[in-house]
Image (cartoon, rainbow, N blue to C red):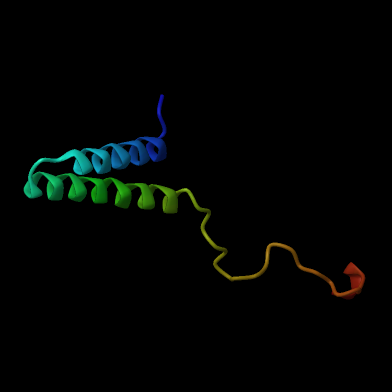
Length: 72
């Protein structure tokens, strides 16, 4: 099965290619608008795949700057 990212990327590419072959300006604009929609969906899909940042904004690793763990 095709992933969402791959589908949106493929459809955007297909619409841009169709826009380049369009005979009328109206058809070209419709195809470019569709390509834009697929690119926006791709962007949203990729952003939802990113992990959420930590609520307290602490780094993932607490570097102890040469001190032992008992001193922290």
